[in-house]
Image: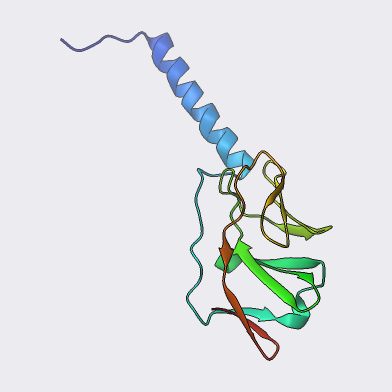
Length: 135
């Protein structure tokens, strides 16, 4: 014998599922995901493109490149460790996630403000002349 559901129960369940899907879509967040390092030798831009004390996000590669101090370059996953949203800004020495405003240090990817509680994974780099590449 199959279970019987009232129309009210079916509609309530459907409405709750639709509301959850809409909330997730509007927030721009996804289920937590991580970015793997791009292949070795992948160009991440020129040293002159990364400001000292700042950085830039390479959305197509899911990488954020920073220069915490002159001549020191770092690369991290651009996917927030909280819910997998792509970070979209490097400002005031921090990498910023737009979804829930988690912030990460440009020097080591550590969490400076939650809700994220894990650092951004770091990728190894090499600088050849004025080009930054994945090591």
